[in-house]
Image: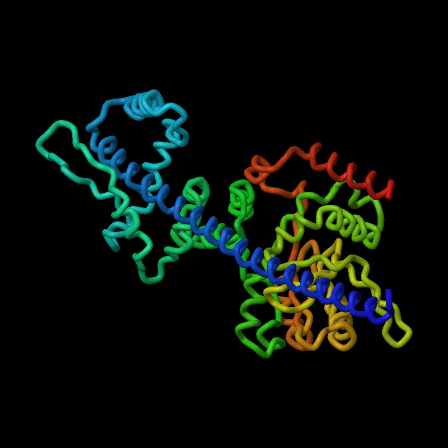
Length: 411
């Protein structure tokens, strides 16, 4: 074969390869678009199912409330109804006597919505005969349920209300007693997509009263006040680090204890991130920076997507000291000068110490120009007895820690 023919064949093969590569890109783009549509549709379907369920449960709760509270039904009626329902609808789930009572609670605790706007989550009771001994009601049809999406109450987070599952709602109603707390935890459950057990833990930790309370200088050091408020909302004034092996603390000097705390956090970094909220990416511990021949070691370094900035944590075993602010300020200055990317905002630092006088911290912090906050933490041995009920036994936490330690030794 002549060199000319070989060259031509080579060009043909090259074009085929280029066309094939182009086709692959086109097909992959189509796959991505279709996949995104499927996932979006599935998410909408799940959301719609949840709204349907909430509307149904609210309506049933209203029906049961009227008939039980007004003594139209006798004692044991809910248990009898639950049992008969499951006989007539084999495989029916979610209609135990306990859950039907939860539906009643759901309606009774949120009936204020009905008072503000009769279209909100109402299972319209039709055909009530007040002259009869037993009041009867009908559950609304699909067309009435779909109207829920059109309702808009002023100052009420309807989107979050309809997005949170019934199980989450019941956990909130059982543990959070005030309206403001319930709204807060409803938004928290929807925003962070937490499991029910994590939601119960947050309520037990009294997240509502600790949120937005961290002593800080964000408003004076972050130029954009919206970003400053976002940073304030991101951090609490106190955290529960229940995975710290408290038996290792107090046996050494303060510096070694701080390394123990750090090691426990690194082994449980997922829990630590969940403790602080969404958007955190772990970058490392004992991160080294050299500045003008001087070594600096940052205990824990993260990047937060929501804040678009690096967040560093300095861990301290004892009480707050002014020197901690100076140390943290120097780290932030170095990060800002040598590590920050052009599209990122200035880094933030948080000191985690055992105890701190908030008023004193805020007073001293006024003259520092780097954005910083000071929070305290508790360990498992200092937890409230009520909180201990919702957490794994101490021995299990220790086994987890020991298991992680062994894995690290094997690496």
